[in-house]
Image (cartoon, rainbow, N blue to C red; front, side, top):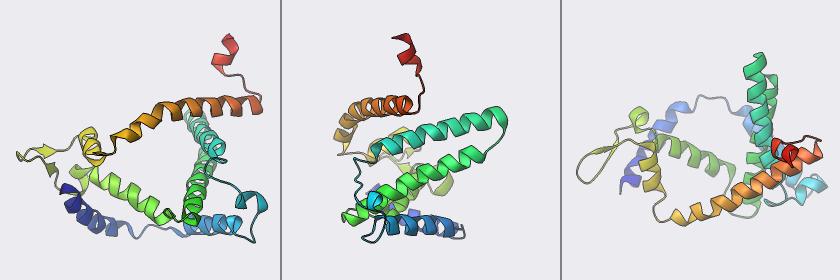
Length: 185
């Protein structure tokens, strides 16, 4: 019930952001689609969500390095580059999903935008209310309502975190970096 109200509000609020320049995101999306096409790159064409998992976690770690570089030096060039590489991962997965008939990049962006609007009622719309009329403004409460009926998805997180740690360790070995946990053994 509340979701339908918020969904209508989300689309009205989102219209205010149409002035944002998106040409380069569209360009990157078109490049990835071309790379994954039949006349594209042989490597890109055969990738799957599973096969590009290592790159996704590695790029996320490189964003962390970019943030650290910026914090220490005030130079943002590396952060910009690594955020671009992480964006590439998002677009790459969205293009794979589109080829599989699951969803496309627009749906990914819409989902994220709608979520941000729902979780920030104090900024974008009147807060949701309980049946007693109390405002619901707590981010975790809103998330709980959103995830109702999908709580089972949380069961996959521990395995994903373990997989992420293994992929990070593998990336470190490939780059010749000794992680603190490996130095102790």
